[in-house]
Length: 376
Image (cartoon, rainbow, N blue to C red; front, side, top):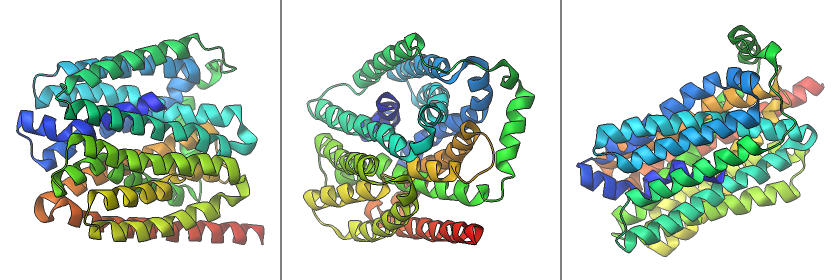
């Protein structure tokens, strides 16, 4: 999870340098995240078949190796088009990681998955924090932006090798390996009565997390003329808030408390994101981003765990299809904020965020009402 996070966040910390080297505007720069997200989404859709054919753990191993290859190609890319192609490889490797890590955790701890999913997903934020602090320091000292790509490519390859050597109770299921069987399981989830609501919640969860993950570093660099080091610290503040939030949820929030946690955090996130554009110093923005991270921390793993208990179908397909909904939100809002920033400035573009949090809170309230109706 930490390696996957590093691959997703190395572009934001290098974004201004890459944009300057290849003459990109913020709109095209934000489009890099769209290129990665499109491939992540496409491969996610194939993940049910991959899991049935090879088993989750083995699939994670080969996908981490592919991710490493994509990062190495990224570091060698001579131009914008080559970076987009390299990010396609990164997205292809990331898609299976995104699709199968959480279902594997769910399979290993089905009775209390919310706690373990929050714990494992905390290491996504650990990867963000280490990448932003390390990458920001490296770039501020004049290091080449390509070097971190090579380092992460090697780390991803090591992660893949570790998964391929792991001995987990996760054997392939030949009866479930056909495309027809995978589609049958997928269709069962898609037609479930409440799937649409949970899918839209994941779009919003991905959007709120993606906006701050992708643009926090650029926000302080552009709006306050700060260094890459300061940009890395800003995103690390957001990641630190997410780490604290996910570890706290894992330690203290029982499965029955997930709905209240999600709704409360969504309302808190609306308040924080409304205040953030008003802050006038790098230090204040860092504090605001830490609270933003605390607000969004629980969304992705907790919504998936909450939904898996209420939707009809196999847990693997439920997790994958909810991730399919969340990834476009993660990448799409990065692009939308980049386009808005070119017109009104990045700080003003952040006013797009409070309505997303409020919509998520409203949807969670609706789902809680559905639960009460079902009990009656």
